[in-house]
Amino acid sequence: MIRHLNKLRWLVLSIVFAMLIVLPFIHLYQTYIAAHAYDLLAPAEKQIYDVMETLTGPFVSDPETDLDAIKGNTWSGTFFGYRISDPLAVVSQSAAGMSLYWPFILTGLIPLILTMLFGRFYCGWICPATFIYELNTNLAVLLHKLGLHTGNRKLDYRFKYLVLGVGLVLSAVMGAVLTAVVYPPAIIGREIYYGVALSGYSHVVLGGFGAGAVFFISTLLFDLFVSRRGFCRYLCPGGALYSLLGHFRIFRIQRVVENCNDCAKCNAVCEFGLDPLRDGFGQECNNCTACIAICPTDALKFSVTIKDQPFQGVGHLGKAYKRHQGQDESK
Amino acid sequence: MKRRAFLADLIYGATIALALPVSVTEARVNNTGVRYLRPPGSLPEEQFKSQCIRCGQCGEVCPNRCITYFGVTHGAEVMDTPFIVPREQACILCMKCGEVCPSGAIQPIKKTFEDIVGKVRMGKARVDENLCLSFQGKTCGVCYRACKLQDVAIRIGMLEQPHVLDGCVGCGLCERSCIQIPQAIRIIPDYG
Figure 1 (cartoon, rainbow over the protein chains, first blue to last red):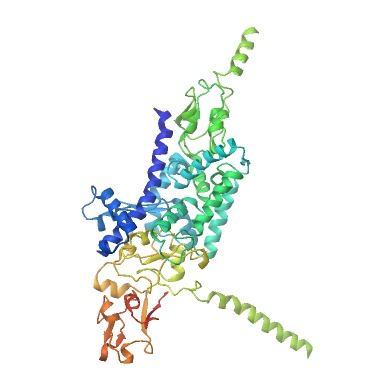
Figure 2 (spheres, chains in turn red, yellow):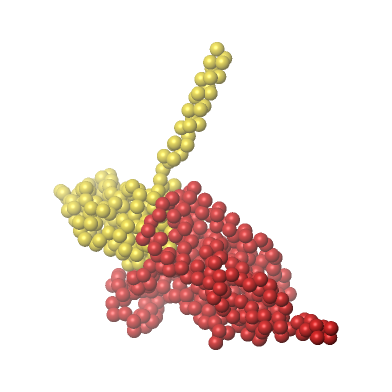
């Protein structure tokens, strides 16, 4: 059962990403309705209109207003009257304005509580950038097989805390929410919207896409050629915030030493380069459950505890442990 | 004598050095090179920049597609914040953006006549009488007919000559509709 969590995670990631693509089209559809000018639409626009009409038709009676129920992106969104915002947005706004605006802070409450319970779950389960970054990792594997050099450099994971701190200080100095400009999930939400809905305007470069798209592609290249998942691990200000908030999380993946056979598949599969084999999870673990899915002996499971276990020794099903036992018996 | 000149220079220099930061802080609010409006209900410009989290929801609910976003060329502090260029697409005062804004940068304003006239401060229209057709003897009156707040925001006199009144909220529908090129009526933005 718990082994299938990784598939569920991919389903969630795909749904979130698909929503980010569909929502701008829904916005276009709504504007076409508001204009009352179906006959004047260009053929491509008519196509958008028709597709969105069939997609949303079963769910709404008055699309122009009913479709306002779901708006926004993972940075900040409206979901049937409830507003949910990224805790990083809340922290950055408070820093930029040097003040607390409670109606907005409360919108970050649910993600905040979930992060304190589950740690960096946002990074593994929701973040639309993760969706692309994990596909990017697969691309890196492919390129590696083709003989290209791909990077897997290890840097200091604490560097992202510096990025977070500098970002907040700069936001306060400039009086603007600057972390939004370098935070991939916020960028993706915006850029998809720009690309779909604003492509006809002259203010934005690259046919709708803005500078954020360029920044995001450079992070993809960084991940490919410098360090696998390097941006999430070493640079992401949001990841830094969630790591800090999730330091005392109560749901953790842990190794059951009796079931472990030291095969080290978990270490190979871990996107964040953690060390499940030696109980090294720490605050960086994003609960992606890839290690649970790949473990052949079900030695990894979720447990409710506030602290990671120290290294429990070699797995009891492994050769090293059996050799050790044999020596003990022969004595 | 030399010392006195030196002291005078010193005082002079110090005054300039002290005055410089003051003049920098009092620099223009708009450094983008675009004459833009903020969406209706927006906070004063400096406050807006610090409150807006750049989520893009205001643009996503705008039924008129008038809200667009700044790019990197306009500077990092306004990048991805919403704005309206009334000549390209003007605000129809539907008030949806204030309703959806989670950050408080665009304050919610009820869609009633009193609230819109009383609280919306996007700017104010100004007529260029040298360009306006009605002032050249060719009766036009398009701006008056485009206005949502007729006789509160704009009035027409002889030969359909437009006169902007105090009730103008600066939505820009008049500027959008002006048939003269370049437009004879423009919104002067109110950045608070």
